[in-house]
Length: 338
Image 1 (tube, rainbow, N blue to C red):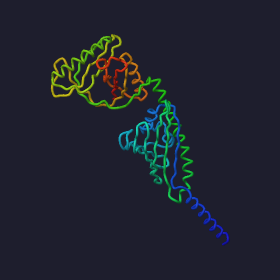
Image 2: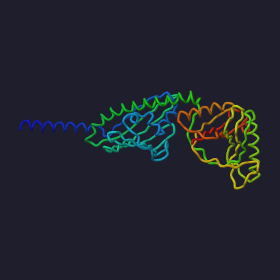
Image 3: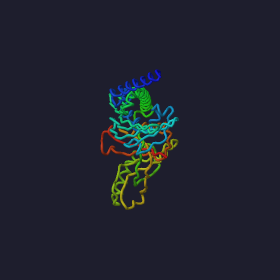
Image 4: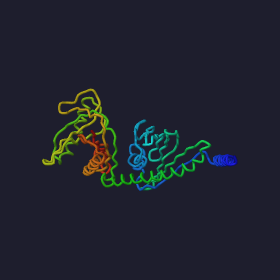
């Protein structure tokens, strides 16, 4: 009986101390870690913004977690989310609520199983010349009797965030090295080439006569289109189909986007370039160095295991007719993806 009283007294005292500790501990907990990464802010931001990239660097997805789906809006946009499930049956979801490009991503982290938990947070990006400081910040709360767990939660998950930042840094630096060494500094984007109807002239031309061919036929197509009551609806397009390096000729087309219900004359063709997936880069400068930019796109398709289709499209936003300084010429180079 005496032993039972001692046990009961011990439990009362222990419970009192526990609840007393819970009373003085804050109900909210904060988990925050930051790291300076040796990579430009746009590259680091892209690693985080596009949730499909997380499987390449997030330690949870590279260990015992498995990504089951990526839905909830367009990838890289607000309301996109990623789900996961591990071998122990734990499930969760990270959802992007608000995205401020190159600055901040606000998010909600939800643990759905075994016990529902919701944590609000953000990931911020601070450019520092060629480097970027990235901060992961999360806030949550526990019920009164579980407040003492906040101390352990902060300690445990700060270590997890440290590892996450280290692996994000590793992936970002690797991507930066590829950008410099294989893409020659060009920023390549995956996008969609929008549908457009064009008037065009297609021929096989000797290499040295390509510039003359494009210049003459761009002007002829525009004149013909206006004479046939078409509206010019876009920038000039150079379409490259197939090179013949042995005979030093190239099968190409000069094209101009047009809009209207008429028909061009017999010397001109009229086709529709379909909407399709593509990659592109913005090239600035004279046309002599465009092959280097296209090599960067070829390297990108190889690294990403993409399959290309013809033609290669050069969209001339600004050229010699608008700007005498060739350093300011602006060409968008499109590679179409199967």
